[in-house]
Figure 1 (cartoon, rainbow, N blue to C red):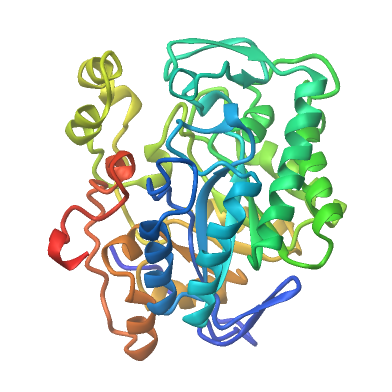
Figure 2 (cartoon, rainbow, N blue to C red):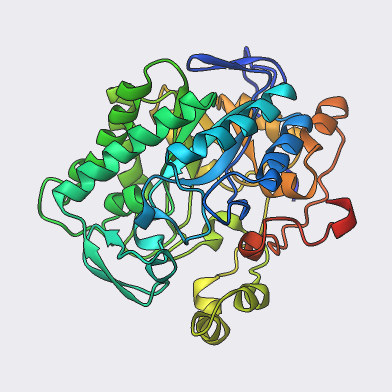
Length: 401
């Protein structure tokens, strides 16, 4: 489906012109969104991880985002994941240098997986807003104490400082997809009755403290963004009216340079974000028993089917653009020059691309050269289960990767 037509708007910025993001300048307004690369099996940067982001930078993106950088051992989605600690800085510096050599900027997505963490893989009990059974780890997460929350907040600040020390230009705080901070924002998951639960204002407290702690630690050395779920697509969960409260509070706190607007829940409804064909067979094959059997038996209820269309999160994102003055990043179904221009015309300062760049890392440069360029991505989502073996587009021959 083609992108909707852009409205008439004065002074629409050129998506391929330079743009300020907090204290840094990007060569254009296209950001490679964070997509877990599956390329840090020992929790450290590898040559494959460096090349993954170097290729995106060489392909024309203004900034590429390293994902997912866990801020604590129990905050990893699983053990084969980059864990922010002093030992990671030399590798991060090498990655940053490779990206900068291609003329792009680089951001590190920082977060704590919370209820999305696999405690069995991590070997550490998980923490969530409430005690709950974790289907990934097949054991119970414990309810985070105020001390746990303070530790995780500080861990985000520590991780941001490490990224800045390594030469990164930005960090993106993961407040989405029912990870730790996002789980506190969800009325379905967070039913606490202390200062971190109750109404939408109190549920936003962990997000606010995290953003402020990071900004206080890094100052204006780097840009600070946050990825925020607008709608999680799950019954009783996060809705736009809840997320707008959070977004306004984050804006008023002044700790962030931009919000990346997202949707869906990795815990409850991941396809609300991805759209397109649900890769049931591929996901089942990638899982260990008994999760494999669960996907085969009831995967259609977890991996629901949503048709793909260009700019599919735009209708939700318009509500946030109308309510906020801070810079916003449009994500979801951005695969064409028409959609990039539409994002600018709608008042978004940046646009993010993800799956399309897995298949064609040079797509941004080709769109800049020829506006008629079309993406080869067919939105089959077969790339998603490859996170367990090294994220890639399975439709690209191995000899061409």
